[in-house]
Length: 203
Picture (cartoon, rainbow, N blue to C red):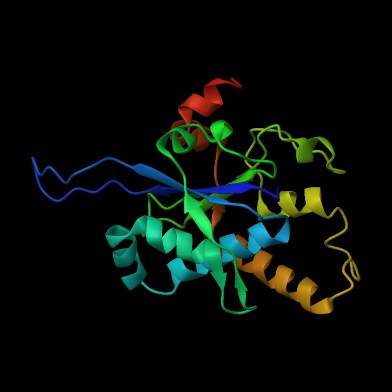
């Protein structure tokens, strides 16, 4: 049960020196969150991007333990006292997100070109049941911006008094603004490169 969601992180290639066995190409890792719905997925993305932007030293931690840093960001929000455990995805689920246990879309974060370029991201629906009932229909297997993602969940989120809690409304507006300022939306061609097995199914 829950609003099952996966987040995927595309890591940069690592090159030390010629013929070094630790050299590798770009790598994708992923995590499963049992309850990540609507603006909670936005909050989690915001936390990770904010952590990336906090300083170049954080990029060092990514190289040391990319999965641990990613899981931690999606598990805990100290600003609102939120915690929910996550688990690391299996290789098959990382290769093809449609094989994962999902009913509320995915988040993709691409930091392969950092620090030269901004991190890139998108949300995406995979043909799940929730997408079929979305009031503002969004296409499956298409990169969605944070604004599109929220519009699908809350069609009037940009209108005043959309939420009974002004604090929640303020949090979300601030986080959307931060994401749009510090990250760019992934192109579909890049998603096809990261997940060729999945995207080949819908070509």
